[in-house]
Length: 386
Ligand SMILES: Cc1ncc(COP(=O)(O)O)c(C=O)c1O
Image 1 (cartoon, rainbow, N blue to C red):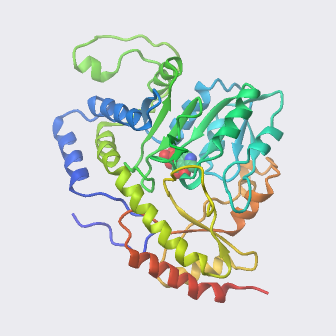
Image 2 (cartoon, protein in one colour; image 1 turned 90 degrees about the vertical axis):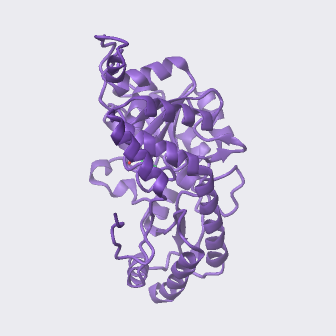
């Protein structure tokens, strides 16, 4: 079947799918078992192997479900405060809020390093703080030594939002293995994409069991086990959700996992090509340019426009040239539901107002990068204000 036709010459992201994903999906459909089963167990085992460090994994229906379970499993109770990133996707805040916790926003380190600032985390700690949630923005590691030190000294649980970070590491150790618990997203635009899907990872067996309970109604036996004749009934240990993944997505996840190292490498090559072109442009800067904390996953290609640049105009000019862009992320303070959550997080707010995300995906060509850069070079002088 033909792919959806696109109005763009260069899309923001594209799936890295081929015959292997199509075959895996078809084989799963033909197997006669499509809800959680052996493929999910295999996917969890393979992902745990990728992470190492004695990790255990629970596959779930999406990254937000993973975060929701992570927050509950970390023991966040109504009234507890959780320090969260202010430059992130809203799922981080929502997962805390729907659990009854209160979010406390933490700023990034600087306009050049968009990782969460360990000093600001420490400043935001109160007697009510229960946990810290961090995000490895664009797949560039936060300063894990400093953040783990703060959490240890204040006896706080650490949740890593690794939605951007499959395959990335901090000084050689995989991201997602530093905190008590990590949440992963396999949404379509992610480095490992299954459409909708996610993973929770941890090392502690008690946390592992807790997350397993929360994923599937606290039930002791899955439908798969009953189908296999291993049990006829079940107990319910605690209240939980239906946050299960299905076999088709797990099968896609296994194929995508086998491609991850190669596709992250291609993302790196494309990013380095972008760096070469963007460094020579006037009117913007590139974050994480002096990054030295490990191997990133190069999830997205963000730039920071100078204050004088009219971002809306740049987006418009790029659109005229067939280039799709995005913003990661609008400021939390701009959202109706979170207006009263004053940070202050001035660096994040500034970045939200001036950030622009350029296309990046493993099947992109060098010529695509050149096309995007040529369009940006055309746009920048047109967008300079004052
Ligand atoms: C940083 C971050 N956290 C959490 C999520 C939520 O993941 P999902 O869309 O799979 O629920 C996303 C996904 O877009 C994300 O980018």
